[in-house]
Length: 156
Image (tube, rainbow, N blue to C red):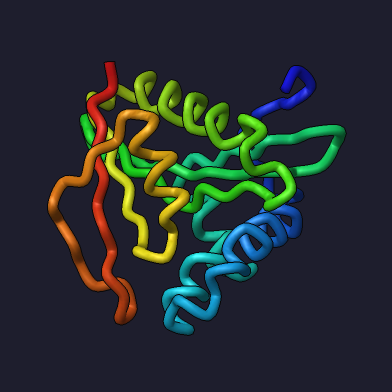
């Protein structure tokens, strides 16, 4: 996907980022608890907080935001949140390019490993992360009444 551009999100991107998150997770809404879904798709204020506390990237194709991912770090450990790609662009390489870009950013921050959490309904995401070197850590926590499964990866 040659014309795909990835850059840091700006506050002006908020509406498009929220639309991307909502569209990406809409097929799973019935499998989420209401609180877990709200925490996943965000709203104006929770997105504003994410933009202030995390490094948020957007993927842009022909002027449209088609994907997003966020990361934070604490010392050598990075953590990913909010990977989303518009449904019509799944399988087109957008997620892989976003993942590469956010992992590259984490490396520049001194991170040696990265974690992420996902839920059982997101089987396609689990397969994607496993294909890209992520392994289940065995840690399962509660996410608003759902199982939250941790994945980890060493950054080379």
